[in-house]
Length: 479
Image 1 (cartoon, rainbow, N blue to C red):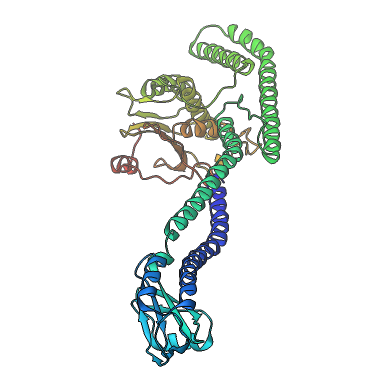
Image 2: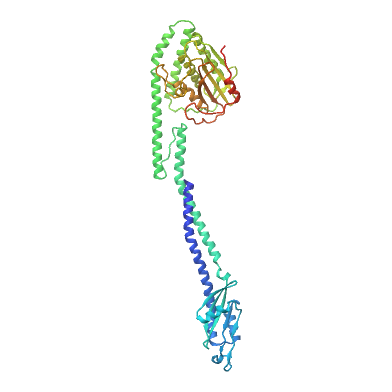
């Protein structure tokens, strides 16, 4: 907007300057020409009194020399009756034609001026000449020729045009400066509005826009600030609702903990009590997070991360006991060496528990499953696969909250996994595993790139490293 306004002002000012400067330059040129010929007319008029008195050559040469500023004057006296010339001292007789000075005009132009009896100008090499007729005492018409060089006609014209051009350039520069200041006054509020919108999108809920600038931008700033306040209020209400709903779980958790304490000894009892304790800790974490006054963002902080191999081993130790009770075969691969990822430990635990819980919830007892971890240098891929019936519509399964309702699914488990991957610039895909059932691939990016745009959740295109592709396609078998 700022540069557009500057361009418009430059165009308008340039048109105005041209519209006035071109005619004014032509007027200045005509004025310089009129001045040069006016001086020539004054020089010719200075010789006229002498011509009306005498036609003596010596006298006229002195008059011409004193009247002309240079050797640019000539006098042409025609032949005639000399009896009327009292200053010549001679008797009657025929007077010869007399030419004093250098003649530049053509004879026909001199004859035409003498015949018409009025002054005229004619072009000659190097300039122009003024032909001024003068009546002699004998009744004949003499012609005074004054040479006007081209340099005298254009004297001072270049300076005047330069000054005129300088004024025009100064006007254009001034218009650019004024337009730039006006553009800054209009653009700065718009830039602040854009910056605040980006900050709000990044999770900085305290971003606000100063209500200043033109009326339209002030109204936009008021609307933005009102929207930001409403967003903060909605998030606060959502946190309160999450805290309230989580708090309602305390009563059934207390009953469940008391019942678990009365189960006695044994692996199943210990496993049940551990699960109840973990569930209670998770509920307490949800309540504390929801009650926190500072909004949480999804960005991974500097230094955040965990060892994916260690987390997978720990969670598989937990789920393996339940798998053994249900007769499920389990395989874990790629966890023999540390694999660092830029994901919080609690987030990875929640994602793995969501996927493994789906395996136990949606497949029959005895269905095998596997967890593989692949470290590709710039990305870490976690594969959770099973030998169940698979997912008929992966795209619908990735959509948040589209649970079937008949099996108790809410669709939030896959959404938790997807948000974890996308926070690093990765993605989640659902496909058919080599075991015959569902394979969920979690791509965790390690280079810290921004998440890529997607047409729908989990459908981003990315070139995979060749080594990882071959690893995925290699047939796997359970022990």
